[in-house]
Length: 126
Figure 1: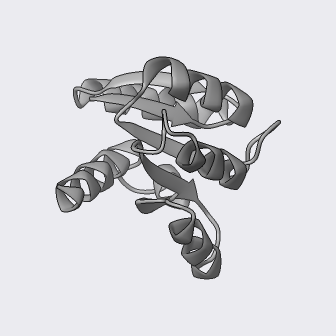
Figure 2: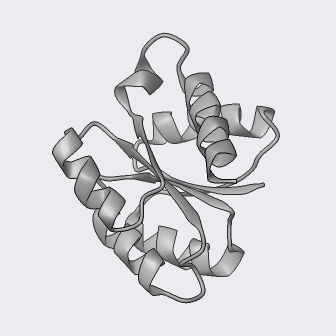
């Protein structure tokens, strides 16, 4: 499956990309919201892993744009966040299929815990 990873932190982007690639995913990376929208339209990934705090176009704006565009509205979006549950409800309403706590990327099992969360979410969507 093709995954678009949208993360402005180069360290997290590289570590996460490496882990997803090792897990068998084809990974495309974007460092800001503008690039994310362009790459989503260009590559039609099956999944977008979307950071919320992004330069140029924010994560919530990217999510709304993806869900309003007929070409990208079917893409599954998992939000990478350190935001509260209150914000999660609003993002869910806007079309987010799942959430992953960014602090989990820095602790314990690191990016491999994201792979497990992605696989669980995708299984639950089928």
